[in-house]
Image (cartoon, rainbow, N blue to C red; front, side, top):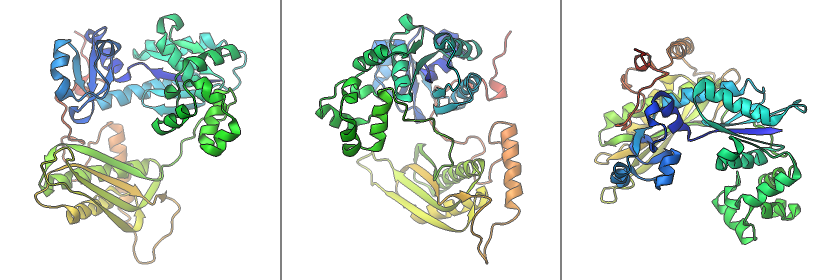
Length: 418
């Protein structure tokens, strides 16, 4: 059996754990730079605040309906997510973290377990230990567990937050209830094709000839159909080293000067290098991106990228940052107001197994230095040690005018009980 455990309105729930005054009130969480709504409480949904609403257009609406608007507090959400995932690993060793707020669990050798009781145990422990409400969907396959989770969330009072598809009757009933656009893994394009083929519900999709599905669509779509038929075809994904690592961000404001952009590029490059070292890889190539604000139609636009091929594979923040900053200087255009930039590392190889060059190599001092920096930053759970050309105050410069305290990751923000 598989389970999908999904945190309810995760960002909002994290804020409510540390600020109980937000409970039973409409709450909206904003994206980077306080741009648009990316998470809403059930109360905000009922009022009619749409997902993705640009806050500058909906500001008055939020004030009229007393919707509490909060900037994204990613350090808090990341730490709370880590706590939830660690609790899930106590129920089974087979856990696939699917996103920041949901995970798949596989139960091998649990044949004699009462999954209704077990599902409620999972939900209750997470709620008791973290304060985060969840819903649990349990079924014979991953795709069906996703459907079961949606039913548990939709009918929260009736199910108690836990729903199990453990019979053919329940499977058919669930599929006939689920619209085709709500099936996990079916994107907008495939949705159009399936609707054209007469599929309005998930059940209709399972009735299509499986041979035709495999030929006309893809092996992935066929596996999804088999999963919905109750034949487990989609397995838990193992952690794999990424083939490319990227950090791309919008700036807090538009920048027309090279110095600010060089600082941002250096910070992005260092962040990528840290991820490289974490997964035990080195890179051969660096791609630097620079973009103007595409929404400002009255301003001159400039979209450009630069690829740098390194003479040797590296994961040194010093080497990668230096190459990235040099690259952005060659593509920067004076007079342009830039809004977004990014660094992509590709051509990845294992750090302990790659082709050496006869004439050039990494400075041998870099490896122990990077190791020391990583250990210090890990110990203090923040980027305390930075390069000289980085901003010493913040890692990401984002507009966060409604930011709440970092209750669990900053010693100065810990709640004091009086």
